[in-house]
Length: 101
Image 1 (cartoon, rainbow, N blue to C red):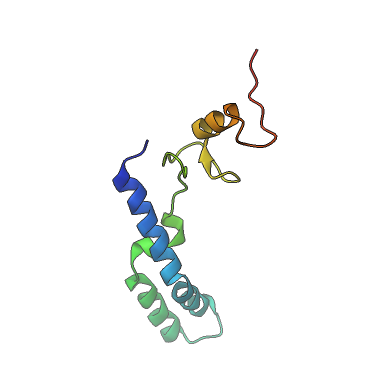
Image 2 (tube, rainbow, N blue to C red):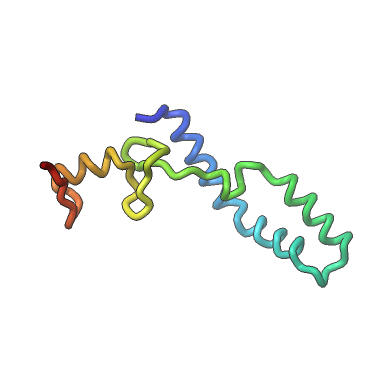
């Protein structure tokens, strides 16, 4: 089980990403537009830099919804490999059969 503080930090980051997504997209559009004057593009890049760092989508990290584990994360099911094994053994994931030999 991951620390509660790490799980809450990720939730806070996800909230910030969602909050600033439109603003970041608009500023990036201006910065990447070659037809705009250089001064306007530079001002947009400065505004982009002033936004909170945690509002960038690249700072998000996938975590297991059950345990909070950051590694071995299955995107389709949103759980870690360990949680996947436990759920599969309990028969809670349709079509998944744990092999044993």
